[in-house]
Each structure stands twice: as structure tokens, then as C-alpha cells.
Amino acid sequence: MEGKLNLEGFYSFIRDSFSKTVTDKNTNIIPLALRTTAIALICFFLPGKMFAQQQGSSLEISHLTGDFYVFTTYNYYKGNRIPANGMYLLTNKGAVMFDSPWDTTQFQPLLDSINARHHKKVILCIATHFHEDRTGGLEYYRQLGIRTYTSRRTDELSKKRGMRRAEFLIDNDTVFKAGQYSFATYFPGPGHAPDNIVIWFEKERVLYGGCLVKSVEDSDLGNLGDASITGYAATIKNVQEKCKQPKYIIPGHNDWTNTRSLEHTLKMAQELKQKNQP
Ligand SMILES: [Zn+2]
Image (cartoon, rainbow, N blue to C red; front, side):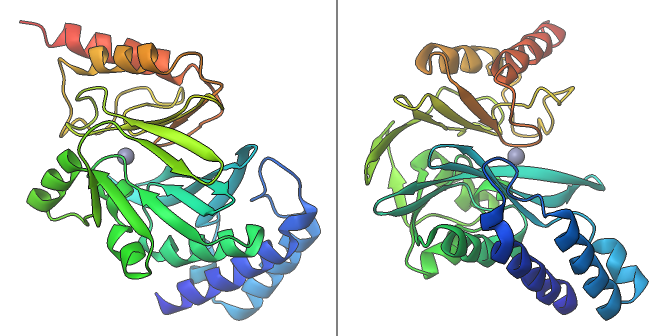
């Protein structure tokens, strides 16, 4: 897919060049005139079949609040194109990334976009559980000198399941300091996966939930292949106990603009437990 890669680089170049004119939320939205130009150029360079694959951006970056940004890439699960959310934070020491893109073609474009938009290098990347939509880029980023982290629990599962592994491991819930910011990693118990952690910015009240937290758009708990059917609900309650009154909650997939996602997840987890009671 050489053509796809090159074109996307070109497309994101256009977007980045003009993104300064777009404010705040939804910086991925390209002004209409520009979009028309870009589409015209794409049509000019590509046969129709390839054009069909270009609809919808491969990497979307949206402003969350302050120095917080959400990035979204896409991949296929059971034949459907599914978005996966990650987050990055700008600090005066560099950018910190929470989970890597799911789409492996976007590892470098994400770094390039952060550099182009904010003139920041990514200095640290933490993956919140062992699945590839979180850990996929760890090896790539480690080779570029970015400090990569997972919990030891995640590392053990990654090793067993052939996933990418981080350079540094955390044994317990840890408070990280990055420039002017600090945040806590918190393991609330098994839920979506045996090793899922959340990231809590207590001062800013930003909860990065990862795949443990489902979006209000989701009608079920998704991939339960590694989930704790009986423990999920208690784990969500632990998150609610630890992370009080979050202003923002970022789930691993789908819409992240609604803070009812945690309650919504709890409800589904309680139903799951009930259904599976002997
Ligand atoms: Zn996921």
C-alpha cells in the first residue's frame, strides 16, 4: 500500500499546513474549500478504486482541553472499521503519549503531526493494557528513543501473547511527573483485560480510561475474550471511587465527549455479571 501511505502523508501535510486556521475542537475538520482542493488533487492522481479507500482520515487529532489532545486511528475488527482513541499531553519537557495508534501506518505520522502542530517531540509513551490497539507502537517508539512504559502485569501478558513490549515497567500504581504535569497510573482490577490500567489527572480531572471504559455509543462491552465477566463491575466501581468527578473521560473506542461513559460501562458490566450468575 505504498500509494496509500504516500497519499496520506500528503493529505496530512495539507491538513497540518492549514490546521492553524482552525480553532480548538475538531482540528481534524478541513475547511471546505481546502477539502475540495484536496479531493480534486486526489481524484487527479488516483484511479477511482483507490479514492474510495481514502474517504475518512486515517489519523484524527482533536483538542480535548488545555494541553490535552485525543488522537484516533482505525483498524478492522470482525470486518468493521473501528476507531481507537489515544491521548497526548503537551508539557514543557515534551509530549507524553497514552497508548499508541492502532493503525500501524500512523505511528510516524502521529509524531510528525505533534511536531508540526506544537513543535514538540514525544518523550514518553505509556500503554494501558497488552492488546495491540494499545501496545502496537511500543517497539517503534522505543527505537526512536522515546521512553516506553507498561505495567509488569501487561508485560507478562504481552510476552505470552507475542505483543510489543515496553522498555520500562511499573510494578505498582505510580505517579509520573512530566514537566509541569503529574498523573497517576491506577490498576483498578481486571475488567476488559486482566491488566487494564487507567490514567488519572487529579488536578485537571481528566480520566484516560482506555478500553476498560466503553463509550456511551457502545451497546455492549465489546471484545470479552480476555475480560473478567464477574469482576468487571467491581473494577469500574473502583475507578469511580478513585477518580472522583472527572470532567473528561476518554474511552478506548468511539465517542469520547460524554462523561456518562463510566456509569454506562458499569451498567453493562452489572448486566453481564447477572447474566452469568449460576
Ligand atoms: Zn481496545
